[in-house]
Image 1 (cartoon, one colour):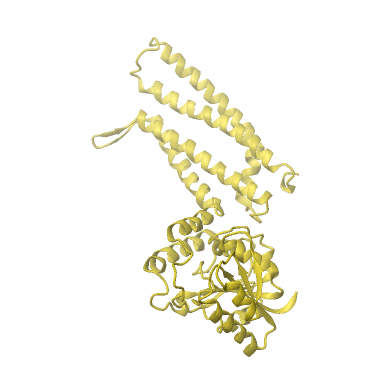
Image 2 (cartoon, rainbow, N blue to C red):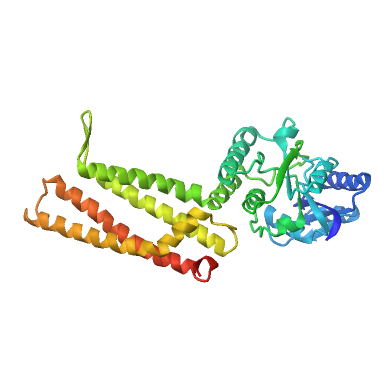
Length: 385
């Protein structure tokens, strides 16, 4: 890999603003004395963007697969230099102001994010909803889920080491590529930092490619998928604890709050909550194990690994025990029901018993099936040897 920098711009019909972006990037390379190239990752332009780029001396890479992420992934793969600095070709970022990225990369950072909120957002450069709702909310969720200090997940200007980013196996095709890079860098413990980055109103004479609601949802969905603990585990654990406590409490004695009485119907609903919680926790384990198998999650963590081993081992025995106890309790409740001629049940103890042991039976069957399924997912993994 050559020492130097590739200044990478994704492009789709940017003939109006592309010349000024290329001119600034070439001037930066000239004045800084850093070896490098300006690369245009063209994503199917039908205007004069390709001709302009070639005339100005930029390297043009044609990316046949549509999407912001596809264009950038193709450009990163084709880059000829150790460092890559990417930025949109709409003149919203200043390609003369790139030295700060180089300096941080020289210090040993793998990913250097621009932060538009630190550097300043010019009037008209970002809509109210993006500035005060979309970006802060999604970046905040990203910091909580992935324990990263990055405060501007979606800045379009960032610098990185090509080898470090290529090793992450980035695979998204759309705007969520911006989040994927930060998330996977965090999961793989790459060294990251941020630098101030000024955002200017873009110079386009047409609407931007970004679609606020669909692309915002794609970002959020990506963050959730790559954080099974927040998507499945923590909600499931909360449902399990609440459901279990309330089932036991209501089985022992009905709960009265003023004129309101919580009894059989409430117990049934909490039994459903418990079952949903168990399933949610299991989905967390499945997602982590599968994500590790396909190389998307580098480490499932000691807790999830321990639960997975328990599910595939002792969890089978526990499931069998629950199923037997549940079946015995169901037989008892049927016997009690038979004593009243299988008619209308006035004794709520019979109904509470049926709910309690019916839930235990379902949990037992669920645990056995889940245990075998986790063993299927674990086939061939080193942790299972």
